[in-house]
Length: 310
Image 1: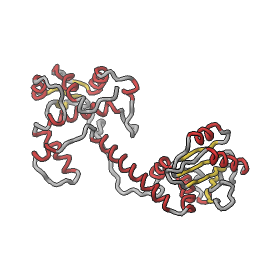
Image 2: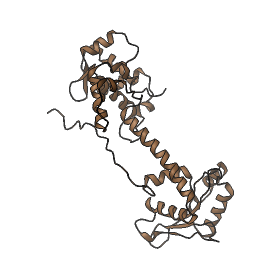
Image 3: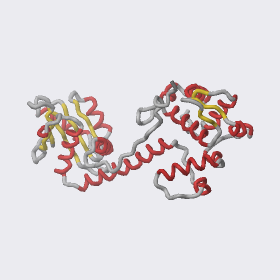
């Protein structure tokens, strides 16, 4: 089954605390995972950042929202217990507790208002804030989704710009990208464009060492999305590698590779890496080639060690 969203975890979290005993967050997370029948793989699934597990993150957000609404109270590090308000909520026999339910409490409205104002929003009254919908995602999941959407649009724009540029620009871009990725070390002269008429299918060369004993040969095809790279082109490139007495090659295109082309590259004795348009744009973003940082956001969390009790 899919990992439940954090709002789905609110009522089960409150029920676990219903006996009035102080609860350790880690124990509750494990108990909830058992209740939802999560597999070990689902329990261990990591956040995109690699810093923390998805289910634990959602369970923690469920607890945080319940605390902000006054249904739970934080007691000490990583511990909490139910409040009188929480007991009343359980007594209602609700089928679900979510953001809409929590929005009846002034403390929760103020919590949401603080979040809006801290992001530079204009001051608004509590009634208006209560009506503002929040998605099922946790705030940090929403942030990552937003960044992903921005990068999707950026990848499309990068490919459009590349297709509109001269072919020589594209060849130089590929060499610059490989150097930015660390191929050829820090030497400026490590990469060069050689693509000209009669180049034998080689557009660029990256020297892996100062003497050029280890070289990576590059072929670049600036194709529209409707024009994929087929097997004969990969076969021709492999022939060019053989003629150059090379065994490493990178074939880059702004479109995509047909399945036969991919199969040929996989089974060929030479190491031929295929980079399609989507991967090319993603690599450019990752290694800051053709893009720049517009704004840096820091996602910060409580330093539990700082508040450790003696």
